[in-house]
Length: 200
View 1 (cartoon, rainbow, N blue to C red):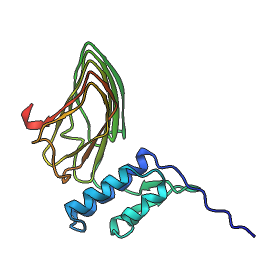
View 2 (view 1 turned 90 degrees about the vertical axis):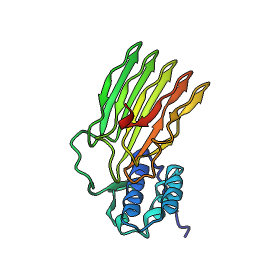
View 3 (view 1 turned 120 degrees about the vertical axis):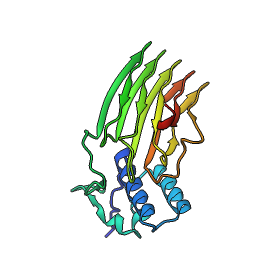
């Protein structure tokens, strides 16, 4: 009798974020070197299937907190490390020839904006923290946003840019000890500036 292989499930952003959170916490506990953490985070971000994520955290006690949804192998964190007061999804907005100041609340894990000839000022001081991963989906056409992060935040830029790009100030690129900010979106003649919150 031929054995049928178990189905593989494709990983989503939430699955990769859960693994990133575990790796961040393991680094803070001294279980991983900074280089180990970065290598594993980079591998987690490129994982296509959920079964590729589990080996990245299998040797870490923090990895025991990853559970599985019934009937699937999708990773979900069983508990949060830092108290979170806002909904995980910060919503979506549209910015046309305008902009506003946005304080991203504690607990926000992702938010989206499309900017055309405009852009918002996002202060991530309350949203970031040890073990937190926040993803901003910022699409822009001839526009851009200002992002203000606290010290120690690792910024990973996964945006698609056409005659454009994000500018991450060298002082704003941290070691990940205060969380990870992931930038996604399509940019056309546009881009966001990432700066330290104190430089505002």
